[in-house]
Image 1 (cartoon, rainbow, N blue to C red):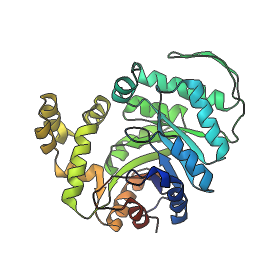
Image 2 (cartoon, rainbow, N blue to C red; image 1 turned 120 degrees about the vertical axis):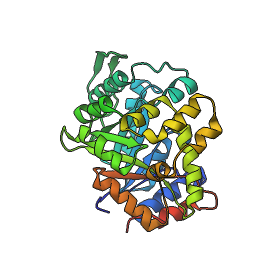
Image 3 (tube, helix red, strand yellow; image 1 turned 90 degrees about the vertical axis):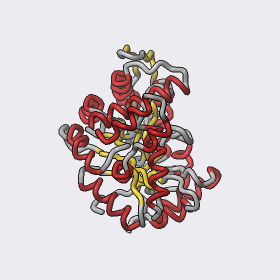
Length: 320
């Protein structure tokens, strides 16, 4: 693999949360350069990074991503500043619009103008994390008289989760890079150039990995995830934009309320392109394809596989 960075998603979903500190320490010792949290259906995104910051010394820590709507701008700036000061030079803040499911259905917050909200947050965070007193009316929120009590040095890098062209353009033009997910290695070649056209940028990709040689088991897990996620409007639109016509039968069945038929309609080759599986050396080769197409920070997200010890999987997939 050509990349000098090799990331793992924390916390490991199948491991006890009480073991987070021990696991983060071990991951750094195994050679993982990056530990990235997520914030979706499992743990919150910041607590695992705080735990990892206390037990690691070199690993880069990132959140991919903090939803743009679910925290107020001031609180998000305070949280980012705290982590950046706790692990100087080792923290990247990823922000993104998230989805209507998380924002509206789970948090009772209107999911409106996601592009504008994310852009406004990037601009606000740049100012706040530089120590400026922010008194500003943005298009989607206002901030009156906020100045952080301390200024992290250096300020954290900011990356934007992006799917289609407008958000990708924002990630390249106003942020330090992009966070990608739910795409194949070849999809990166369509997506990343929109960002890197603005110069050298971080291209972070969370890559789903089912650490098993059992292809049937991995595909069963992948089909469930694909029907769960890629029917969410923002992800469906993304894959339509990518030209993934092979998912059209699944979408038709889903729209008709035919859940079992939708699951069965996901082709094996689509699962195999979006969910990496196989022996460790095969997974490492597939990860290398992502870096060959422009990813600078591949981040493994281990999927829970019955009978597979996630900690052993991190050892098996550690950088060689």
